[in-house]
Length: 285
Image (cartoon, rainbow, N blue to C red; front, side):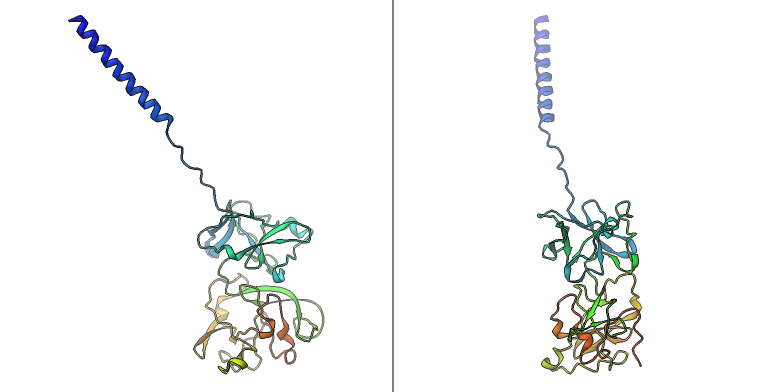
């Protein structure tokens, strides 16, 4: 009887050891959780500012209104306050972003910088942590980078089709002027002969209208310096035309949809097709 009991004990011990070894083997083969690597460019909610572009750590990225035609105007000491953003060549981006909208430029100092829809991207030095947007509106020239600006601001020298330089009051001379552009930096104009909410130029003749195509857009995001209440829309031959302070907005055909071009300010003479900005008067009733 004792032999039988000892045998049973040995069998039981062997079984327990095999279970223990099996469990140990299972533990050794446990697959660790994959490491989640954040995308190099992300879309983050910035409260009242809506969705903004950030880097992989959630740090906010910005546009500079002096960056005409995709060339960075921030140099020297400016870069201390506004360091450039440069994503890897094989950057990963969040869903909702289009890879074709991102490019890389080589700056005059030899550094590479990432652009979005032609706008070079920067950080702001006073943004201490992810989610800060302290650079919004700084100097009326710096704004958070967004995907859906209906209208942006540009600061540059006005140069007419006649090759002459113009100031903000459209007299000849040099000086930086701030004015409204579309999301890609293409200049928007008003027609002096229009009245509030009334387009007196467009005729629905393709050849005629190509000289001054209407700007057709629905208001989405705006830089904080602009007042959404100043914008509206009208219907022109079945198309929506954006208005600003009552002025219907147009492109100039010979600008060839090129960011930074302001040729229309001199056609047929200064003041007939002015740029528009915060100082523009309300369109007449």
